[in-house]
Length: 172
Image (cartoon, rainbow, N blue to C red; front, side):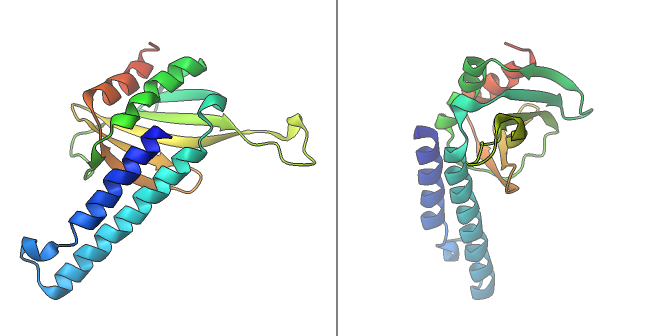
């Protein structure tokens, strides 16, 4: 999947480029801790990229948009093309970022039906939250959480990405 390859490539580039922490004037112990933190972050980002490949984009049942400050639902979208169009710009993500200082704006939950396993019938299915995305007021950084495993990463996105995600709140 194109978006996952871009995320993985960015993470690997970060993981390879930043361990030269001596350039930052850190001592050996600080350098080792810094490098370990970067490697952990790269592993987390790679895991998210792999897990995003497991999201069955064509089988999403709905996206629920909540106002972060209140938790109130502002939109619930069940139209597949609308959901897919909102998440397609994630393929333009540029890299990893720190959590922004701006307040959280929207929390977007992406739900999909569970997979029917051998021996189960369709009445045994339920919905699982596959992904959670947080936008921040006035920021192009988004936070992605792969819900089933609780893995979270902050990504620098493009204006197209945040605009598409924010458009879900208005039901567009």
